[in-house]
Length: 276
Image 1 (tube, rainbow, N blue to C red):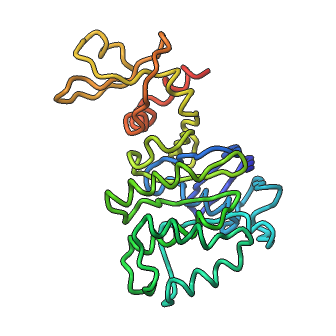
Image 2: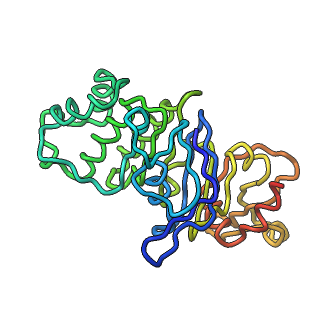
Image 3: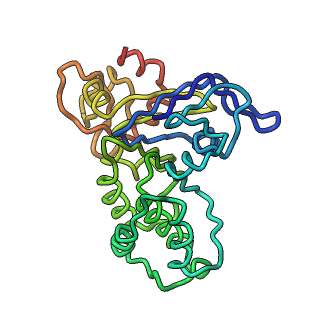
């Protein structure tokens, strides 16, 4: 669905990507993780055709994003982190924007909005940032776009709304579409994404499915100092030592994405060797 080869991009003198390559396939919810300022938003905007690389190739659904062809634009949707919405009633804004997406479902939008307890009779400019973000999340899903790019979608959401976000996103992916969620709030994506891509300073440090991570790495709490000494990564807590170990026995376990992210940043080379 998305093929990126040898991507180079810079803002004036600051290089963001230098030779980045990546493949995104249908049927997945990708978690694009990394610190602020590491290129997550730039990557999403390049895929969406809002930025133009200095060098390299991007193919999305058979299109070159930078050409901004109408057939391409109606098949993707980018939900940005920063919102600039017009002073319009919600229903009118939705009606205007829906015309650009042939597969948009008003019924689906209304159902999603009800799940978020959104006041659809209000105006966008009178809503809080969190409410505006929920309007865009509902609209994005209701477009039924083949490729959905979401940049820090949980920013501005309260705890209940984050739970609802995970619920609706879990049912949003199928064999024909692809969702990419960029965030630095790793906990918000647990039990939601099925592939983890971690970038830093414009480089891909780690790219694996949740299943591969679970088979290869063991996440556990232990009081055994020998296990702690053998761990790839460890954190001490009042409950004992939280460890990441090689999963030599194939024991089923749920990855801790926050621990994994920190381990990749500190022990990335050692971790990646286990997947080869």
